[in-house]
Length: 50
Image 1 (cartoon, rainbow, N blue to C red):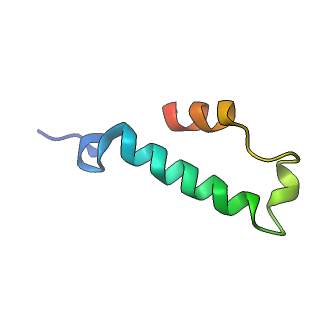
Image 2 (image 1 turned 30 degrees about the vertical axis):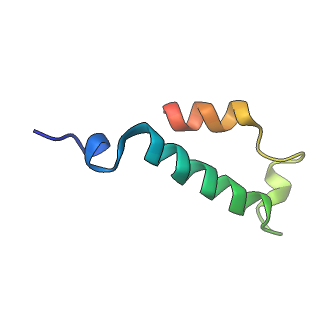
């Protein structure tokens, strides 16, 4: 049986998804102030693992 994680492409796919999301957040006038200085790599890695 394939898990949802495997079906979605595994860790590499989730990393692409999260990084694309936060790249857009950093360029959004409304959302970027929530992450002053940008979304750091450590945060991205934690969200990907979660």
